[in-house]
Image 1 (cartoon, one colour):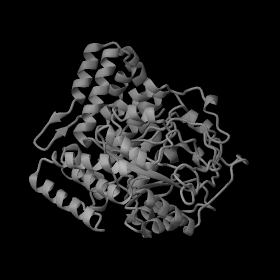
Image 2 (image 1 turned 45 degrees about the vertical axis):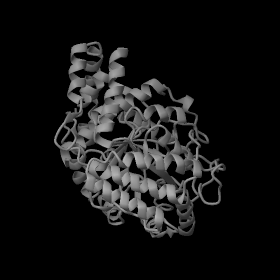
Image 3 (image 1 turned 60 degrees about the vertical axis):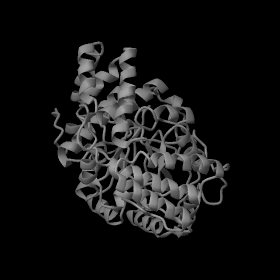
Image 4 (image 1 turned 90 degrees about the vertical axis):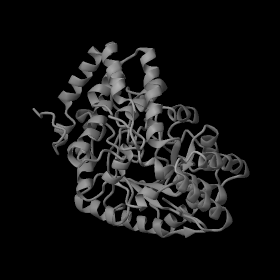
Length: 485
């Protein structure tokens, strides 16, 4: 029998089934233990230091106690604590990105994804480099600076060479004042050698959803194809870091397995990365299973309601305070509004989940024939930006840390010490000003520049505030772009 060991490189030891089951039993036994719950909440509370705030975070077992707790008063305290931690680490900034689907060819048999090999109803499509260029221009014309590229697993249609060439194409497109400054990559688990190639191509974060940490369920949900190998998939982040990629993103697909099990496994994976590499996940995504082509989410028994979803999100923020939490357009406007107060720090906007979904389509028109899942929030990027600002959030298109080498342990040390706010706040305002000047509607500009003026006044260091004001003035007066701290 495998023994739990967060420092092990074997999946069944750092995501240990017996440890998860013991954790869930412990959480159930202590879900009404108010003294313990208060102790856990106090441990997680932000503590003031000379530069800002620090947070201790929580272990998977401590966080699981909070997840099991059903005391309304304590749940409200969890939500408030999550909001406080997010404010302490990331302020009121929300990072904006968009997915770009390159190909839906796939050799896997994943039963929850319409790209599975046996699906003969979905049209198969792979973008040429010229089509990728047109997609990038369309995304730049919307105002995007950060992309997450997606592709099915197919060694013939989507080899690593195709992904690398696509990344090169994306970075090469300079249209008007537009540039894609960070390309995150969400592709199948691969080799150390291929991760080195991705690093050398200049990717931002390597993202791979675990889908489920329950090994038996995982193998049933992935009956055929290379993704069937649970250990190879689960150990992918270690190979990515061995290959020199120091920013990685985790996530599970809620709805496939019992959520308490997934929650504990997800936090154990974060603890494992910290224990082995000294750097936890740069991001954690919280997707829920959605309808798509031949996929009916009602066929799965483990769906979670909005209240449970919000609680999970808040507790991820409390347990892993430094991570970026991502909520996509899988969720509706109302759900996304709620989760913004539960610790979310990144959202997609104006997203298309079809291969070739941007070029040639107006904002109100979207193709559905190659969608990986139905998009619930179908607002344009401009509408999402304005909505964020009207609710007190700064939409940030910043990619400065990535391009200044503040990644991996360098980013985490700044984040955990509270110093990251010194550059992120002004960078957010400068990139927002770029968006307002180049892409925003008049209504969004009116809201935006009022926010920029107000937020400039909140920059504590006079020299930083002065430089930010001067740079924003140049953004308005000229075509100079890409100022950053």
